[in-house]
Image (cartoon, rainbow, N blue to C red):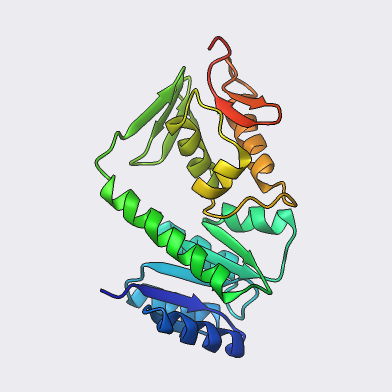
Length: 232
Protein backbone atom coordinates (compact mmCIF):
# COMPACT_ATOMS: atom_id res chain seq x y z
CA UNK A 1 0.00 0.00 0.00
CA UNK A 2 1.32 3.43 -0.94
CA UNK A 3 2.29 5.80 1.84
CA UNK A 4 0.84 9.30 1.84
CA UNK A 5 2.99 12.43 2.09
CA UNK A 6 1.91 16.04 2.56
CA UNK A 7 4.35 18.52 1.00
CA UNK A 8 3.93 22.19 1.94
CA UNK A 9 6.23 24.37 -0.17
CA UNK A 10 5.48 27.84 -1.54
CA UNK A 11 8.02 27.71 -4.39
CA UNK A 12 5.92 26.02 -7.05
CA UNK A 13 8.84 24.86 -9.18
CA UNK A 14 10.46 23.10 -6.22
CA UNK A 15 7.16 21.68 -4.96
CA UNK A 16 6.17 20.26 -8.34
CA UNK A 17 9.61 18.72 -8.90
CA UNK A 18 9.57 17.08 -5.46
CA UNK A 19 6.03 15.81 -5.98
CA UNK A 20 6.98 14.27 -9.32
CA UNK A 21 10.11 12.64 -7.90
CA UNK A 22 8.30 11.20 -4.87
CA UNK A 23 5.45 9.86 -6.99
CA UNK A 24 8.04 8.07 -9.15
CA UNK A 25 9.19 6.43 -5.89
CA UNK A 26 5.61 5.19 -5.40
CA UNK A 27 4.42 7.67 -2.77
CA UNK A 28 1.09 9.46 -2.94
CA UNK A 29 1.83 13.18 -2.54
CA UNK A 30 -0.51 16.09 -1.81
CA UNK A 31 0.98 19.55 -2.34
CA UNK A 32 0.08 22.83 -0.67
CA UNK A 33 1.67 26.10 -1.78
CA UNK A 34 1.13 28.00 1.47
CA UNK A 35 0.78 27.23 5.17
CA UNK A 36 -2.96 27.80 5.36
CA UNK A 37 -3.65 25.40 2.49
CA UNK A 38 -1.28 22.94 4.14
CA UNK A 39 -3.19 23.15 7.41
CA UNK A 40 -6.48 22.49 5.62
CA UNK A 41 -5.09 19.44 3.84
CA UNK A 42 -3.58 18.08 7.07
CA UNK A 43 -6.89 18.42 8.91
CA UNK A 44 -8.81 16.73 6.08
CA UNK A 45 -6.58 13.74 5.32
CA UNK A 46 -4.39 11.08 6.89
CA UNK A 47 -0.68 11.26 6.13
CA UNK A 48 2.30 9.05 6.91
CA UNK A 49 4.82 11.91 6.74
CA UNK A 50 4.83 15.70 6.31
CA UNK A 51 7.41 17.93 4.63
CA UNK A 52 7.27 21.64 5.52
CA UNK A 53 9.05 24.66 4.10
CA UNK A 54 9.61 27.34 6.75
CA UNK A 55 9.14 30.70 5.01
CA UNK A 56 5.59 30.51 3.63
CA UNK A 57 2.60 32.85 3.30
CA UNK A 58 -0.23 32.95 5.86
CA UNK A 59 1.18 30.32 8.25
CA UNK A 60 4.93 29.69 8.36
CA UNK A 61 6.46 26.25 8.73
CA UNK A 62 7.31 26.66 12.42
CA UNK A 63 3.73 27.52 13.31
CA UNK A 64 2.25 24.80 11.12
CA UNK A 65 4.61 22.27 12.70
CA UNK A 66 3.43 23.35 16.15
CA UNK A 67 -0.22 23.01 15.11
CA UNK A 68 0.37 19.51 13.76
CA UNK A 69 2.31 18.44 16.85
CA UNK A 70 -0.55 19.52 19.13
CA UNK A 71 -2.76 16.96 17.38
CA UNK A 72 -0.27 14.20 16.59
CA UNK A 73 2.93 13.49 18.50
CA UNK A 74 4.09 10.67 16.24
CA UNK A 75 3.77 11.66 12.57
CA UNK A 76 7.25 12.32 11.09
CA UNK A 77 7.88 15.95 10.09
CA UNK A 78 10.78 17.09 7.92
CA UNK A 79 11.47 20.83 7.56
CA UNK A 80 13.01 22.38 4.43
CA UNK A 81 14.73 25.74 4.66
CA UNK A 82 17.46 28.00 3.37
CA UNK A 83 18.29 28.91 6.98
CA UNK A 84 21.35 27.04 8.25
CA UNK A 85 21.99 28.61 11.67
CA UNK A 86 21.92 26.43 14.78
CA UNK A 87 19.24 28.69 16.29
CA UNK A 88 16.99 28.09 13.28
CA UNK A 89 17.43 24.33 13.60
CA UNK A 90 16.76 24.43 17.33
CA UNK A 91 13.58 26.43 16.75
CA UNK A 92 12.38 23.86 14.22
CA UNK A 93 13.11 20.96 16.54
CA UNK A 94 11.45 22.77 19.44
CA UNK A 95 8.27 23.09 17.39
CA UNK A 96 8.33 19.30 16.97
CA UNK A 97 10.21 18.67 13.73
CA UNK A 98 12.02 15.34 13.43
CA UNK A 99 14.50 16.36 10.75
CA UNK A 100 15.82 19.47 9.03
CA UNK A 101 17.20 19.73 5.48
CA UNK A 102 18.92 22.86 4.23
CA UNK A 103 18.36 24.09 0.68
CA UNK A 104 19.78 23.43 -1.81
CA UNK A 105 19.76 19.66 -1.35
CA UNK A 106 19.87 16.60 -3.57
CA UNK A 107 16.61 14.73 -4.05
CA UNK A 108 18.25 11.45 -3.10
CA UNK A 109 19.19 12.95 0.29
CA UNK A 110 15.58 13.91 0.96
CA UNK A 111 14.42 10.48 -0.20
CA UNK A 112 16.86 8.77 2.18
CA UNK A 113 15.62 10.91 5.08
CA UNK A 114 11.98 10.13 4.23
CA UNK A 115 12.59 6.39 4.12
CA UNK A 116 14.52 6.49 7.41
CA UNK A 117 11.71 8.44 9.10
CA UNK A 118 9.06 6.03 7.85
CA UNK A 119 11.07 3.01 8.99
CA UNK A 120 11.40 4.50 12.46
CA UNK A 121 7.68 5.32 12.58
CA UNK A 122 6.85 1.72 11.63
CA UNK A 123 9.22 0.39 14.29
CA UNK A 124 7.64 2.60 16.94
CA UNK A 125 4.22 1.27 16.01
CA UNK A 126 5.43 -2.32 16.20
CA UNK A 127 7.05 -1.69 19.58
CA UNK A 128 4.07 0.12 21.05
CA UNK A 129 3.69 -2.57 23.70
CA UNK A 130 7.23 -2.14 25.01
CA UNK A 131 8.00 -0.90 28.51
CA UNK A 132 6.19 2.39 29.10
CA UNK A 133 8.15 3.69 32.09
CA UNK A 134 11.89 4.36 31.84
CA UNK A 135 13.90 5.40 34.89
CA UNK A 136 17.29 5.93 36.43
CA UNK A 137 17.95 7.15 39.98
CA UNK A 138 15.06 9.55 40.76
CA UNK A 139 14.36 10.32 37.08
CA UNK A 140 11.21 8.76 35.62
CA UNK A 141 9.86 9.06 32.08
CA UNK A 142 6.40 7.91 31.00
CA UNK A 143 6.45 7.11 27.28
CA UNK A 144 2.65 7.13 27.02
CA UNK A 145 1.83 10.59 28.34
CA UNK A 146 5.34 12.04 27.74
CA UNK A 147 5.61 13.02 31.40
CA UNK A 148 9.08 13.54 32.87
CA UNK A 149 9.73 13.72 36.62
CA UNK A 150 12.84 14.11 38.72
CA UNK A 151 12.45 13.82 42.50
CA UNK A 152 8.70 13.87 41.79
CA UNK A 153 9.00 17.30 40.18
CA UNK A 154 7.50 17.59 36.70
CA UNK A 155 9.95 18.74 34.04
CA UNK A 156 8.81 20.15 30.71
CA UNK A 157 10.76 19.06 27.65
CA UNK A 158 10.40 19.90 23.98
CA UNK A 159 9.65 17.05 21.57
CA UNK A 160 13.28 16.71 20.48
CA UNK A 161 14.59 16.93 24.05
CA UNK A 162 12.19 14.13 24.98
CA UNK A 163 13.37 11.95 22.08
CA UNK A 164 16.99 12.49 23.08
CA UNK A 165 16.27 11.65 26.72
CA UNK A 166 14.33 8.53 25.72
CA UNK A 167 17.31 7.41 23.62
CA UNK A 168 19.77 7.99 26.46
CA UNK A 169 17.52 6.12 28.89
CA UNK A 170 17.17 3.15 26.56
CA UNK A 171 20.97 3.09 26.36
CA UNK A 172 21.71 3.96 29.99
CA UNK A 173 25.11 2.79 31.13
CA UNK A 174 26.39 2.80 27.54
CA UNK A 175 28.49 5.45 25.84
CA UNK A 176 26.68 6.81 22.78
CA UNK A 177 28.61 8.85 20.24
CA UNK A 178 27.41 11.98 18.49
CA UNK A 179 27.19 9.88 15.32
CA UNK A 180 24.95 7.37 17.15
CA UNK A 181 22.67 10.17 18.34
CA UNK A 182 22.55 11.79 14.88
CA UNK A 183 21.53 8.49 13.28
CA UNK A 184 19.13 7.18 15.93
CA UNK A 185 17.49 10.40 17.17
CA UNK A 186 17.75 12.68 14.15
CA UNK A 187 17.94 9.97 11.45
CA UNK A 188 20.78 11.82 9.75
CA UNK A 189 24.49 11.35 9.14
CA UNK A 190 26.56 13.24 11.70
CA UNK A 191 27.59 16.67 10.41
CA UNK A 192 30.85 17.71 12.04
CA UNK A 193 30.05 21.35 11.23
CA UNK A 194 27.01 21.52 13.49
CA UNK A 195 26.77 21.63 17.28
CA UNK A 196 23.03 20.92 17.45
CA UNK A 197 23.54 17.66 19.35
CA UNK A 198 25.76 19.32 21.95
CA UNK A 199 23.22 22.13 22.27
CA UNK A 200 20.44 19.65 23.03
CA UNK A 201 22.54 17.70 25.52
CA UNK A 202 23.17 20.98 27.32
CA UNK A 203 19.44 21.74 27.28
CA UNK A 204 18.81 18.40 29.01
CA UNK A 205 21.56 19.00 31.53
CA UNK A 206 20.08 22.35 32.54
CA UNK A 207 16.64 20.82 33.04
CA UNK A 208 17.56 17.44 34.52
CA UNK A 209 20.91 17.85 36.29
CA UNK A 210 21.49 21.48 37.23
CA UNK A 211 19.27 21.50 40.33
CA UNK A 212 19.41 17.80 41.17
CA UNK A 213 21.78 15.17 42.49
CA UNK A 214 23.24 12.83 41.42
CA UNK A 215 24.27 14.14 38.01
CA UNK A 216 23.09 11.77 35.30
CA UNK A 217 24.36 13.03 31.93
CA UNK A 218 28.13 12.62 31.59
CA UNK A 219 30.59 13.41 28.80
CA UNK A 220 33.11 10.76 27.81
CA UNK A 221 35.84 12.89 26.22
CA UNK A 222 36.48 11.91 22.63
CA UNK A 223 33.70 9.30 22.69
CA UNK A 224 30.31 10.83 23.39
CA UNK A 225 27.79 10.81 26.23
CA UNK A 226 26.57 8.35 28.84
CA UNK A 227 23.54 8.38 31.14
CA UNK A 228 24.47 6.99 34.54
CA UNK A 229 24.58 7.92 38.21
CA UNK A 230 27.83 9.41 39.47
CA UNK A 231 28.43 6.28 41.51
CA UNK A 232 28.18 3.91 38.52
